[in-house]
Image (cartoon, rainbow, N blue to C red; front, top):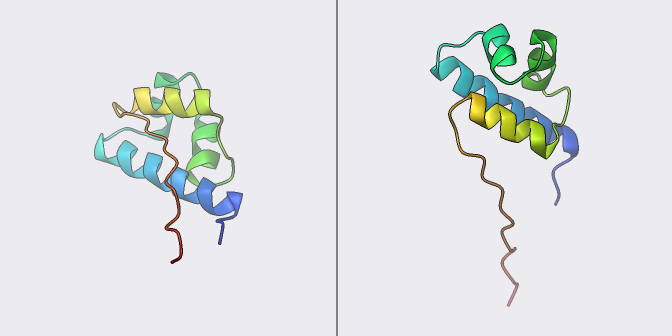
Length: 78
């Protein structure tokens, strides 16, 4: 079964939030690093928006992280 976009948005937001906290950054500091405003970071971390790939790249760079996107094949039933 496929995850709805809202579940993906929440998961991405949680990952960004957790990394931001690890680095000791405020939402405002992260926003400044990636050319956003603090309310946009807040909405994103809360799962309110699904970011574009370019935005994900900027967030990853601002968080000192690599952005890895993969497609993993499902196991084939025998």
